[in-house]
Image 1 (cartoon, rainbow, N blue to C red):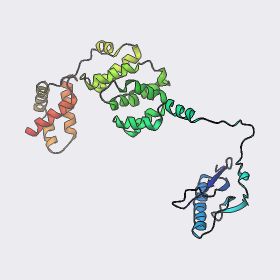
Image 2: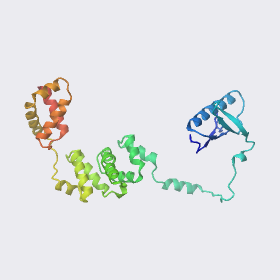
Image 3: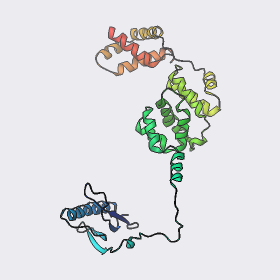
Image 4: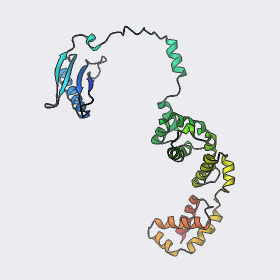
Length: 292
């Protein structure tokens, strides 16, 4: 617009608070920039408000915006609504819709964006996550297919938004072209939720399912992935060994250095070859550090 290759018109009408009828419309022609659109609207609202507050009426007219004065200027007065082309199109046959037709159309209409958004938010999704999924109807359908099969819909949404979207972007494909059944993704999410597998393990399973076309169970077996150990006594044995070998990290933790805890968690995971639950490791470490 600023280059002069595009112009736009804007229509302004205001009405006093409490008035049911719409106000008289004024058209501002050939505005040549987004900034001038803003200035013209602001000025015209103020102009019409001053007229109404002083007891005068707003005329139906066409105006232009003068950049020098920052005001709208009268071009011509519309003496009749026909000037605005308020008449039936003679080349189009009138269509009369029965009440039943309208009611049936509403009843058979697919679930709309706002309704889905409300339902997704109620299921625990963040607004930004729900919006990403709803941007693509095919992704929304994929999500819907597995939504009822998992314990937490947010976990399924996370896999879709992060891992699945990354794969789609990398291979320049749409989700309807993805060689993955919605039921398989739900099964992988359940492995994380109730099967004792970490997110990283589940991502490895997902990658193999997509690349090899196997089921999640087959992928888990072929990758020799086992559920992480959450048994407190087993984890505490690793924790004790690591703490005994890292007295400086204990001192650092006591001194308020948060990174010390992350280091100790890493040492336990390394000692256990990643077979223990990291969240439980962190809890056990904090508990044991508080005793020392």
